[in-house]
Image (cartoon, rainbow, N blue to C red; front, side, top):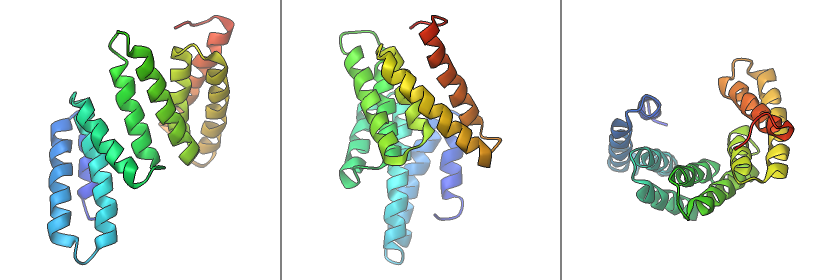
Length: 188
């Protein structure tokens, strides 16, 4: 990773500055290619994969979901078990499922499948909680409950080493909501 590159592009997206994130990812990739490819080919390739993923995420957030999906599928053709690209692709289908219509259930199923693949690849709670919630939305309560219990276990383990892990705490809360659906406290 080259100084300032990763920090600036990742800082832009959470702030909602997706156009800036898109520009940073595009220009960063070009700069790497022209300035560093010859001396550091492996590092440049790894950084360009990360930049392409960031570009896809920014495009998706800007509404260019199909273009984002193409980039993510191209990345998965390079490395099929890329958990970050699998999760990002799952997110694009979850975004498509926000619009009611005959394809909504298909989009939810695809989103869940990609999150489950990411979870199988990395064993982390982020893709698991997304697959869990999608399972609930698909009315697959058994899978939702199983994943919710796994998420709680993973998050509690994470909190032992990182007590300030906000996302682990938020994921536990989401898992608890899914589990409370069993007792009729919430419904779809």
